[in-house]
Length: 262
Image (cartoon, rainbow, N blue to C red):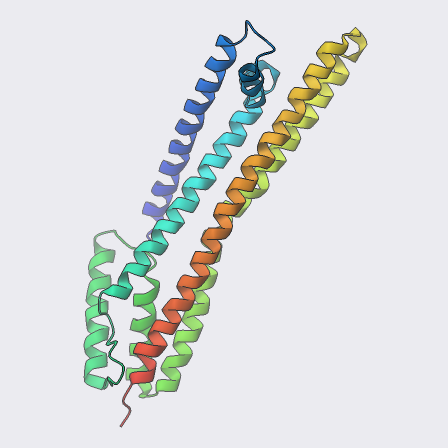
């Protein structure tokens, strides 16, 4: 993906995450206001837990929710890229017949077809990573240069390692959000404890305990959301690692092992 389109897509996901978090927060605030008459109702307590009282630190829950939604959107985006990459397995890019062999002429045709497709996509500003296509293209180029299947295999291994590292770096923002969510919750707790200490000289025990309860709510919400996001992120990591393994195996089985060097 080109840098400009990638930056634009990330900006759109940030704005969408902010809009979704704002909408959720607005509903929670409305529930908090409408249930304020009965302060002992469970619905009212839940609305406080989720940040319905902005004056009592609800803005912390809003920031936490924003990071959570943003992280899920990034995970969804990366998962979509994995699904698009897998679609190339079913395009008959390489011969899959068990006893098929491919010679230099057919290898050149495969390389030319991939090069033309990639050039068209890049010229249209639709550049993605194209892990499978790039591996096959570079393996074809290497074989054409020295007529060695072993050299082509080494290119497949090295490019697969590069692709794994690239995928890992693309997920660095998600890892930062995973760290940021519980940290924001702890910040909210520290602020709440500080506030309760500031009002301790009033002697109002009920107010102090209420303030402490709200303070610990921020950490509770943050930890729950981080657990949900952590599960989604590890599922993404597993799917990404399997994808790169399948790409390498596919190229070795249907290209490297079928090269005819005679």
